[in-house]
Amino acid sequence: MKLFAIIPAVILAQEDYDYEERKKNNAYSGGNNYNGGNNGGNNYNGGNNGGNNYNAYGDPHFMVHTEGQESVCFDYTPSPDTEMNLLIDPSSSLSVTAHATKNEEDNKTRMTTINFSSPQGAHLAFNLDGVHHSGIGTEAPTEPDALTGVQTYGDVNFIVHHHNEMGHQSVKVYIQNGPTFTVKISNHHGGLNFAVDDPTTISDSARGLLGGFIRPDAYHVMPLNTMTDDDEPMANVVINKFAVSASKGTFHKTENCWIVDDEEVAHMLANL
Image 1 (tube, one colour):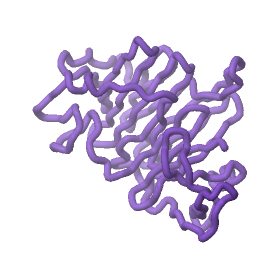
Image 2: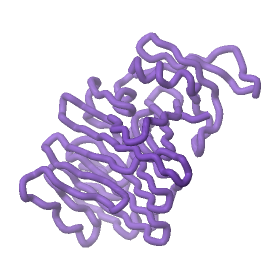
Image 3: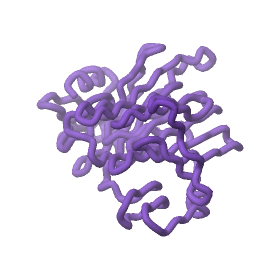
Image 4: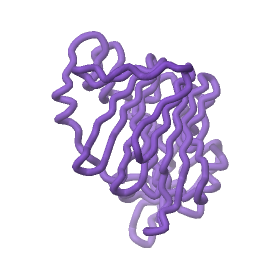
């Protein structure tokens, strides 16, 4: 079953890779917090986002997990060369879109470009070559901080982590006084992943494949007293009074996720 995850939004890489050691080496103790925890100021490497999690990754797959509800997962395969709205927030002009391309070698469709526009007009474009900037006149991002690696571009702070041995990069993106995101770039697999790590300040009017799930009570999981032929529990996922069927199982690397039936995904998205 193919699934698109719709939980407070995040797009993940097809293979996870660890940069915890880099984070330890970049310890920073004053002002903003660049290495996790919840010590006030801005948090540039993790922290507590209240259990929200929104991911888009792989072929592509989606997983969303909003506070107070269980995780929901689904596959969504767009037509080749399709522009997808991942997160559009009209109240702040925050916008994240992705371009999907079909790989003729393995017949899989992956995100190959992600376009990010901040509330103050900082534009970042991500592709297999890395991160590129435009949109604030002739202004360019600052050089990476010698200790933390943080670069500032308008109202955006970002950190680029290189994983040369795997042909991977991960970019942590932080809107000042706002939400945080991760973009992962895999040259090995030829695709990009996107995740909303912390949806702080994203409005209830947000829309898109991930944005539509961020508002409080965006969906409700209602377990049923029935099982699949494989003895998996079943439930209805209710969105705007519209219900789609789902079964609980392992969705790629996500355990205990309510996986929306492939035939129901289009109906679900139409009711976001």
